[in-house]
Length: 148
Image (cartoon, rainbow, N blue to C red; front, side, top):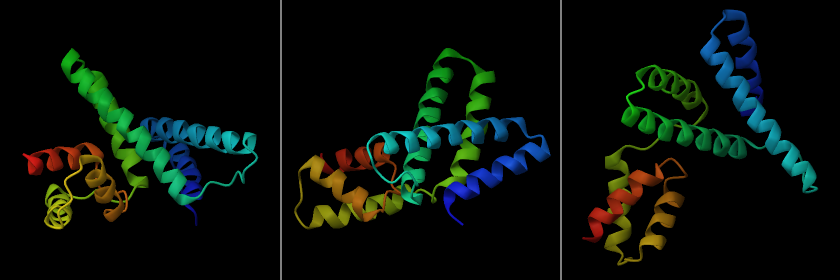
């Protein structure tokens, strides 16, 4: 079963259970995935999305929700914070578990020991070694600390 099929199945489950947050989040995600399929068709490519493409779209949506939570915290909008956090929980079901700070630090230390000191090269290599499981903002923060 592909990840896209799993998302579609989860929408049906959410419809049957009456879980409005999950249903709305999954429907929005499916719309984003459908839009990506349309983009690929327009470019003359195979329209079927790979699991990696689905994960990238989910990660993009997760990033948007995290940014929204930060903005709502600054604005004191607790009602909206709760909604975004619930959507984050739903979206996080579709991506591999993110690496912890310690795991990212281990990767950074391995790279720095080899003598690499260029920030962009470091961040690129960390993301490659982590298989995309490292949060970019956290990886950048750790690299900046190590470069001081």
